[in-house]
Structure formats: structure tokens, C-alpha cells
Length: 184
Image (cartoon, rainbow, N blue to C red; front, side, top):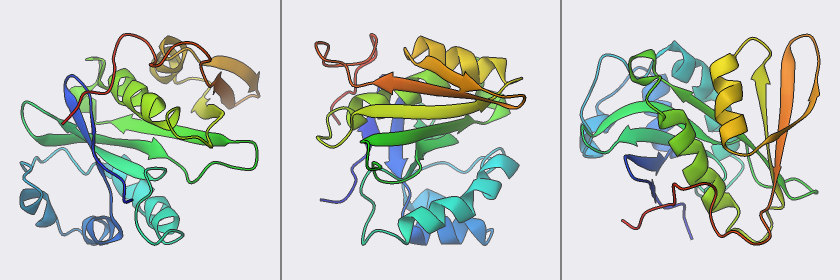
């Protein structure tokens, strides 16, 4: 079954498709209104543009988006894309998926990164093959580290540049934190 949008209190996470990502990478944003979204001058930002080739590589590995690829982070009230988030591919041999997220500067410091991460974590832990979620952030990226800590992730290692994080599948709790995925 193809990936479905993930709904949280304030966000809709819309799965990228190969067509959408290729159009955006080519600078063609005409797909945004066709998805029922409002155009904004803030997205895609340079960070998203730099991520598009990786998203395309992941999407080329599957016949259709599986949910373990990337999503556009849509602010439900304004119906604008405020970032992207998702996984870097299917679970590995240890049942781990790697989480990443980026919120545009204009929407930061509003809890959207945490809300998107919680929505993705809740979805991932409902998938039978997922045993853990991993993430990495730059040592000097304190806001991202705070998001990962609030998500419940534990630091597993660090070097002079990167902190590596891990969150094991919860055994008793059905959702991560107090933000659960909302039905459409």
C-alpha cells in the first residue's frame, strides 16, 4: 500500500513522490497548488533543495513511496509547506530507520520539528519491522538535539562533529509523548 499522509494536531506530512521531487528539484513549483497547497517564497529553501537528490535516490529504490522516505511538512492552518521530514530508507537488518527533519527558518521555534518527529516516530513504531529509530545532528545544533531529547532519544555516541541518537520501540506505550497521529 502506498504511503499515506500522516496527520498531527497542526501538521500534515505529505509523502514526496518521485514526480513531485523531480519537479521541485528542477525549480518547478507548479505542483504545489495542484496538491491543494499554498505557494510560499520560503519553501523550498536551500536546505530542502540540497536534500532533493537524496530523496530521489531513496524513491528510486521502491516502486512507490512506502512511508520510509520523505514527507513535506505542511502547516494545516495555512496549507503551506514549512519543511520536510522523514526517513532515509527502509529499516536496515537491525530494524532501524534513520530520522531527519528540517523546518524553514520562518517557522522554527514553534514546536513543528518535534511535532513532525513525533508523528513519524508513532507511524514507524506501528510498522512491524521497526525496532528502533536513529538520528544524527551536528554537535553545535542545539535546537535539533533538544528535539531529539524531547522525543525520548538517547545519545549513543559523538565525535567532534556529530551526535548519534537512538530510540527503541516502546514496549508498553502506544504513542510517543502526548502528540499522537490524528486521523484524516
